[in-house]
Length: 146
Image 1 (spheres, rainbow, N blue to C red):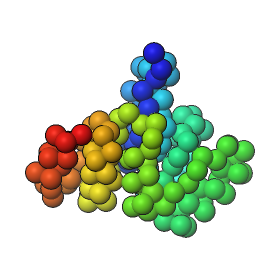
Image 2 (image 1 turned 30 degrees about the vertical axis):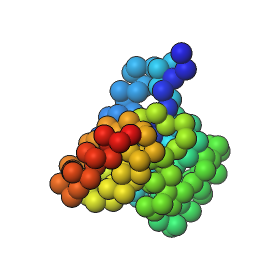
Image 3 (image 1 turned 120 degrees about the vertical axis):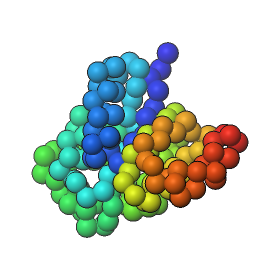
């Protein structure tokens, strides 16, 4: 059986980091990190890229993406494809190899990417209360359709 593909929105926050620890403890034969979405903590994202080797990552801004590219090059770490902003998070949440999306962003930024994941038929593990507060009924309907 091949490992389940996991995408994490908010990978550098506490829930995202804890999710990665759980994945590590369960083993690579069960789970594979395919995409990570982060905000501005590029140092932590560099560590996550080195450890998990995702195919895609998302940074909040062009500036943070440039910082990420520079740090990866400096540390001689292979760079995944880098996307930016909300569109980048949508790419993370709808990654073709993701079986499950952990939505652990802070605030409303995770709303659209989470909705797109549901519309793409992904299993979503929601760790973001704002998404339910803002549009619980819409999310529930999207989940029922997928």
